[in-house]
Image (spheres, rainbow, N blue to C red):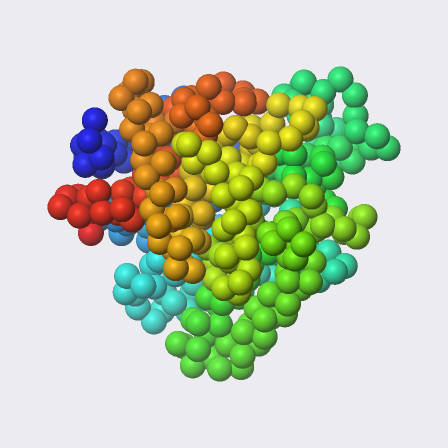
Length: 417
């Protein structure tokens, strides 16, 4: 099937993932506007925080900018209601958030043109979300970590669930079930549930992707504040951004290997694992040109395969994690191809985009579906799974549209703006 034909199919399928929930039903949140869910049927029939952004990237390119604003309005309402954006659209997700992509969504809406009053409300929500991360997810080194806020009884139950999901026979050394459950729930807040990055000690790590996203939040706050004439706020958050970049360079930049990595606060050392999160500082424009060039080389050496960028370099982890080799996830592909392009590595960016288009196309031809993740080595849907992988439009389709646009596959297509 040609790229343009798949783009047409995606546009036809978007309505099947749009939901309305003006009043709460069971444990589903009431939502102020229509919203997008990852799957048209079966699994994941509620909004998910970071999934929404990647789907919105495709929606915006296919002319559904009103849907992007709807999703952003919902997130503003959630921040006003709870003080943060929960992981997903159910009460059970009130114990954690997810990667803070809200600032990216606000930026999408603002760039499309919006009124003063909306910008004021959006800025207030951004400031409040930033406060959540800085007061409830701050490490002693000044960087942030993923976490959770749940009672011990439920942490124990969650710990048992994760042990079963990962087929673990024993707890990690020196961890109680409560501590294991707390770290596992923090890992679900990372969106990378589950992975070998954090050694099952997610609370101990300053993740490079999280801190890049919070840096972007500080940048967008400063931009909006400046546009609204709040010059003191703009100056304050520009300073916070620079402080974060300095801290990330100090703790997360591995100059010997030339790559950004997570920082282990407990052991005062950088992770030795190269992961797809390394490209987030490039994607969000926090790296120097020299850091970007070195990171590109590391990604090409350790993570790039015939059908995309795998989540983590190949190593024996002693467990089957879905955010690990050989799995290639759509968010990582988008961050990589746009991060490379941001620093002038256009050939590499288009190469990654082309690989993503190929793996989606060949599996759509074979199955008639879009999938949550793919095997970046073989180009199949034979992936390392912790649960039965669902057919998924969501971020898979959203990133497909972005990739098609990047390599001009839809240059003659009226479906994309």
